[in-house]
Image (cartoon, rainbow, N blue to C red; front, top):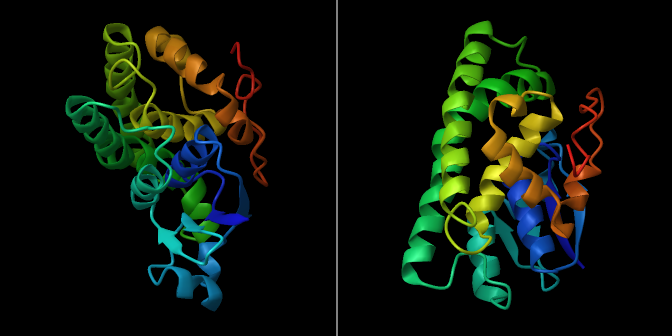
Length: 222
């Protein structure tokens, strides 16, 4: 059995979990408390970060985007980057958008302050960061809504890693109750379609000590 070392609320880990499940590749999720710096885990990834996928043959693949690119190469039957060059470029552009800009402007300011600081013992959330995160999220939800209204899926005609990258960040933020869906109906409709897919079931059943998600989190109809 392939093993995925992960943390439940890490967007990068959630992206990989969605990709694996959409490709119907069975895996065993193993929670890795990276702050413990286990020697065995550092042998798999000297950076000490999750996610890390370990194949049945022992191959260790570290990093969300590296894992997703590897899965596209190794298991191409369910393509998630798109079929044309234009689709693949746009998918990669949006994956980078969510894993870089959205992560810096929203996820780091909200999930990072509320959850990561607590896990790593780095003190209390910074009010300025929280305010910036909420303000930035409005812009990003509008952009997601515009994409969803002008295309079948975020990157084009087919579901792709772009949808999963966006949903990975938003689902983690939704778990802590930080997404005001009432202000973003187009983004909400798109997210409902994504989280209704079978690959999302594992994320919707996540349990995290000390955090109770809002009632709508696991509700496919919101």
